Amino acid sequence: MTIRLLLADDQELVRQALCALLALEDDFEVVASVGRGDEVVAAAREHRPDVALLDIEMPGLDGLSAAAVLAAQVPDCRVVMLTTFGRAGYLRRAMDAGAAGFVVKDAPADVLADAIRRVRAGERVVDPALAVATLAAGESPLTARERDVLVTARTGATVAEIASRLYLSEGTVRNYVSAAIAKTGARNRVEAVRIADERGWL
Image (cartoon, rainbow, N blue to C red; front, side):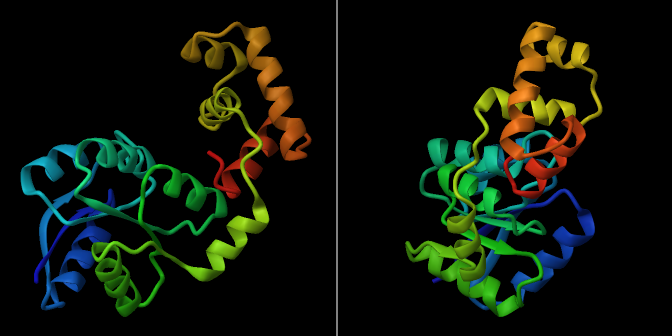
C-alpha cells in the first residue's frame, strides 16, 4: 500500500532533500510540497495525502496552527510535526493541535520512515526523550493573552505597538508582560520572551 505524503517546510533546500529522501522508500509517494503554512490545507484538499509532514516555523501560518486546521477540515490526513526544535512545549502544543507524531529533523532517515508508517497505521509516535522532557516541564503557565503579548514582543515591538496590534490598552499590555515575567522567572521582557521561546511556549 502506497502512503501519500504532503511535505510543508519553508526552507527550499530542506524540502527538496526530504522529498528526495522519502522518494527512496518503495511505499511512499510525495504528492504535494509547499513552502508556507497557509498553503497546507488547500494542498491537502487537492491531493488527499495520508500523512502531512509539517515544519513548525513557517510563514503565513505556523505548523502547529496548520495542524489544527487540518485536523478539523481534512481529518483523514494524519499529521507528523517535523522540526529542528525538539522543545517540550512544542510537543504538548502539537498534540493539542491534533498531531499524531513529532520527529526532530536530526533523527535518522529510518526513524522518520518508521514514524510515518506507524502514524498512517493509527499510532502516535513521539521521541521518547522529548516525551519525558515534556512530562517534566509541565503545562505552559502562560494564558493565551500573555502568550500573544510575548509573541508580539518577540518582534521588538514597543508596549504601544503591542497594544495597537492586539487592540489592548498600554496598561493592559504592561500587566500581561509583568505576569509573564513573573511566571517565567525572568528579569525583564526580553528575557521572558527568550525563556518562553526556549521552552516552546510561544
